[in-house]
Image (cartoon, rainbow over all chains, first blue to last red; front, top):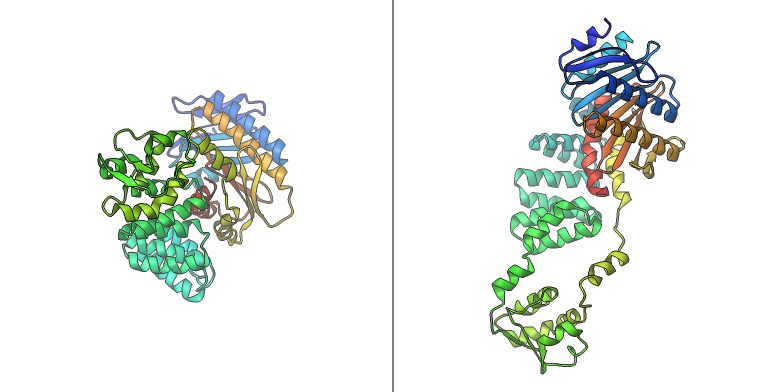
Length: 100
Length: 343
């Protein structure tokens, strides 16, 4: 239910929660996006960032050629949100802060 | 943001603001700010270069040249000054001067694509010159045979009994440049040939095999990367209070240049940033999301913004209260300059 708040935002393509080892706990994605792959990727990035920079709770935003990825580590698991490049990134960030 | 910056118009940051205006097509505003700023900081070369660009963009070439020549006096080694001067002179039709400045630009940065392209368009190719200016039956007489004697084998068919015969049809590939040099003085032949006889001899002495020619200068002249020229754009970025430091590293984790104020193990940091970037890039490619353009890591005591600049990574470490939007705007403005310098 928490994910509803995120996926309702225009141009958000999907959101999910994964375990530290990359398994999907919960996800809501539009057609064409693979939640399992995204979860695995999010877990991988979180682990690398954690090890590299010695951060307790990782919070990263990646801007790629096609989209923007939010990854945040919380008590409940790893939150990941995918949105289009022209989405309101600030709003997504605020919603993530509220949920987590 | 512009208002925020305009408050501090006495500081050197006015050049950055003007650059933003110029990039947005607000040329008059940019010129106004630069004139105002330069009245306070008349020695600020970078502002002069941006003003020159603004005048050029407005079509006021004479003014652009005046400002850029002024900047050139103190910054002869500035790649952008040389390049923009080349553009202005090209616009005025003074191609010789333009070529000089483009060549100077390429000396400073052999990878400057703009200067390379302009030079290609300004310089006629040897084949064109040959077609236009070498006429069949043209004979050029060189008075002294001794100068030509040590010429290597490929040149010998052209040297005959003290004369150099320039023939339009049987010119070989490696000899095109020499033909150009001889063929240019077509009418007052004997006088001009005397003037060019030395360069002819010098050209003839060149090693005949094409493989050796490009290799030798590559070993002798290492590609020149003026890392000092990274300082002006980076210092503009570091003028922001919220920025703790910045550094440029390669994508394989090696430090290129540091502008970090605190004592930090930068080598380790470069390696870590590169590791995260490469890992993410692999993952996103797997997801078919394309290359990573930039990323932002939020830590408790700082935020790390990393931006891909060609084959390098620009990392900016900011205080937690910094506005990431503002940092990205500033970074975007200097990225082109960094790309130009690093290639």
